[in-house]
Picture 1 (cartoon, rainbow, N blue to C red):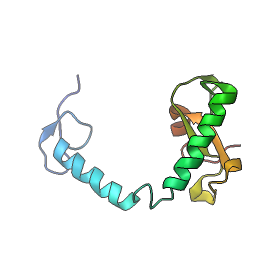
Picture 2: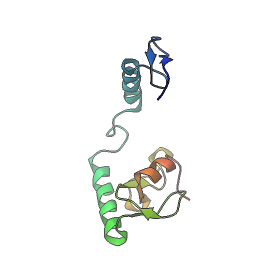
Picture 3: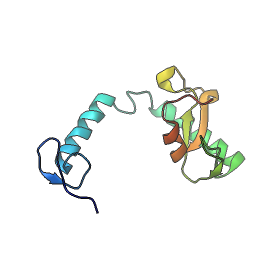
Picture 4: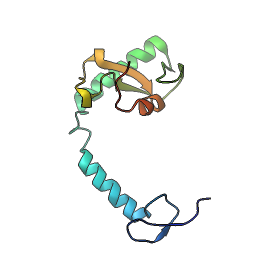
Amino acid sequence: MRRLRPCLVCGRLTRNASRCDTDQAAWQQRQDQLRGSAHQRGYGQPWRKVAAAAVAAHRQTHGQWCPGWGVPAHPASDLTADHITPKAAGGTDDPRNIQVLCRGCNSRKRNRPST
């Protein structure tokens, strides 16, 4: 069990790592506003269609297997579409720039380009 710590904002004791629930919610809301919505970042309906098609094609060919990113290939039911070259680095939604990874590998890759 975590020990109590003072919230960085208000000083109330909390079991959270840095902020009480109220201040953490406010901080997260500010971060979300700065980041922008999925649509604002270029992940609207066109991306969702391309992503769904990529995952469906991958499942039809490879089943429920993640090719792995930084780890060997492994079974995975939580497959997601990922940009080979991240959008932040100039990547596009072209199907040739899409790969399929499980959520864990997609998170591990973050915004780094695939090699």
